Image (cartoon, rainbow, N blue to C red; front, side, top):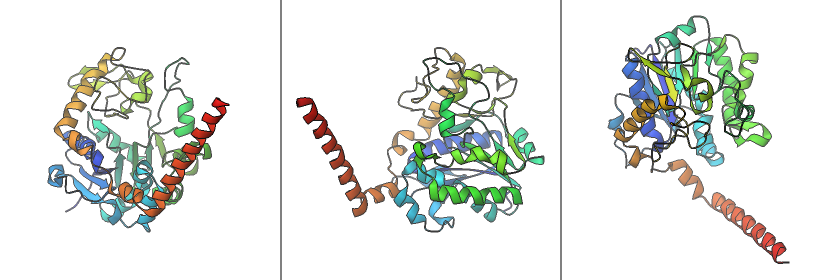
Amino acid sequence: MEVTKLAFTICSNNYLAQAKTLADSLINYSPEYKIVVGLVDELSDEIDYNFFLPHEIVLAKDIGIENFESLFKKYNIIELNTCIKASFFKYIFERFKDLDFTYYFDPDLMFFDSLNKLDKKFTDFDILLTPHINTPIPLDDSYPHENLFLNYGIFNLGFIGLKRSKNSIKFLDWWEERTLNFGYINIKEGYFVDQLWINHVPLFFDKVKVLTDYGYNAAPWNLHERSNIKMKNEKYYMDDSSILTFFHFSAYNYKTPDVISKCYYRYSFDNCPDLKPLFLDYHKKLIQNNIEKISTISCYYIDKKENTPVQNNKLKKRFNLKLSTFLRELFIKIM
C-alpha cells in the first residue's frame, strides 16, 4: 500500500492513551495521514493493542538500532524515549519510499486543525522547527523565565518536520550519533536528551524554517503570548490571527484537571479562561482512551534494568551514600 503522508510519535506503554488521543485528533483533521506509534517497550498482556487501530504500533527494538539493549541499560525512561527519535526518522524514510516528508509529534499533543498549511512549507524547506517562545517573558515571581530555554533548548522537540533530502539525512546522521551516545539529562554538562542539540541546526544545516505562527506548538511555556484563543467558525484563532493547529499539553495530569501544568504555574484557568474548553476536551478524550489503567503500566526496559545485579548495586550504593550523608549531618547538629 502506497503511503504518501505519515506522522509518528514515540512512547512507552504508559503513554499510549496520550498517543491515541494525538493520533485520533490528527486524522480527524487530516484523514489522509497514516500514524505510526514507536513503542519503546515490550508488548504487555494488560493492553489490547487492537484498540489503537487504525494506527500502527512498531516496536523500537525492531527498527534496526545497533546495540539497542545498551540504550536501556544506560538511559532512564525519558532519555530512552527521546534518544531514538533520529533513528525512527531514518526507519520511516527507509520503509516508506513514497514519502516526501514526515513529522514527529510528542504523544501529549492534540490537533485542532489540519496539516495542509504546514505541509506546504516543505516546498521551500527541509527542516521545520518550533521555538519554545517568540517574545520576551516578563520578569516576575512566576515560572517559567527565559533562562529555562537556555538550559533546555531554544526549540521544542515535541515537534519536528523533515523533508526527504540529502540535507535532512545529513542532519539525521549528525543528530542520531549524538542522541544515541549522549542523550542524557545532565544540564550541568550541557546535555538535555535530544533537544539541546537542535540549537545548532539553523547554523549547521540548510533550508531550516523556524515556525513563528502561534498556532503551531502552543504550550504552557508560551502562554504569555498565546493564551488569548478565540473560537470562530469552529476554529481556534490565536492573537497573531493564525489558526491553532496543535496544542502541547505538556506536564498535564489528568488526575488534577483544574491545573494547566504541574511544572509551569505562571498561568491558570483563572487568568486564561479561553483555554478551559481545550483542556476539557483533552481530558475527556484521555479518559475515553483508558488513561486510568494504561498510565499505571510500567516500562519493561526500565523494570528489567532496575532488577539487574549491576543496577541493584548502584541503588544500594546510592542509598548508602544518602544514609551516610544524613548521619554525618545529624552528628554535626548534635555536636
